[in-house]
Length: 328
Image (spheres, rainbow, N blue to C red):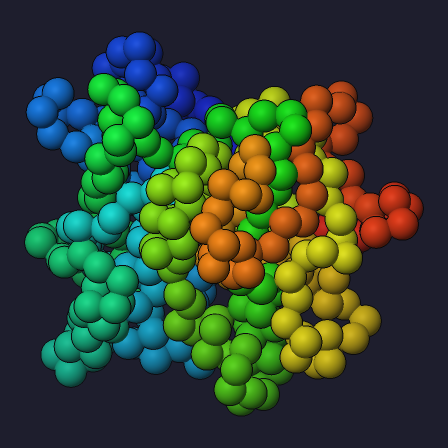
């Protein structure tokens, strides 16, 4: 258990017993990408999450513009909501601003937030501004679950705890591109494609809605890397994942640019903000949407030795180099 997980356990132990629970899997407290609560039985369930970004940890002003920073502060929260199958509605934004910040600087920061809201949904409705030694932005996002026609308890969400043995493991998009962008930017290389993906990532809001409408019950966004986030899914659902490395979606440009490390980058690279999900059958998905996702493995009964087993198409067990994406 790393230190971040340890801190989360402390918070969970202190507050989980106070969370109002009913016989309803969709009232969710600490431990998922977002919490879910119900105001009353006549309304849709509300989804709420908080994510913070800090200068020097989540962005580097050597190559991030202030618009990029504002953009990222919103989309990391839109991504958490997307992984639950929620629409983003509102954001409360708290900013820590250095003393040397100018009015024009703050306008750029705010404009980045506005661009993300306009493109992927939601609006800033309040927050706080304080003085700080470095820039930090903490955003609380509120979304809502769509109504479903599948019964009286009709607000469905995708949860980390809902994976089952026998489920197929799917992922949207391509993996490893954000890490490639960060590595190239740190080397002072102004390559356009990967750099843009790292500085202006795209939350998969529409994908989240497509998945939950198709009956997908388990999902997590890939912010810490495929390996790290798949581990979280396996732990929460008490399953083991078998991954076919040859089926992990990897951009051809990544293979060309990093021919010796593209597999490890796809497995460990964070901040791709793709969606990692499990489902009973690929046939749950609409025909036109099947081509937009990749099935990369299967969940099996828990293995006490390993949470994740990597193989190639010939069923040879592999041991890729796994590193931890540093958010903490």
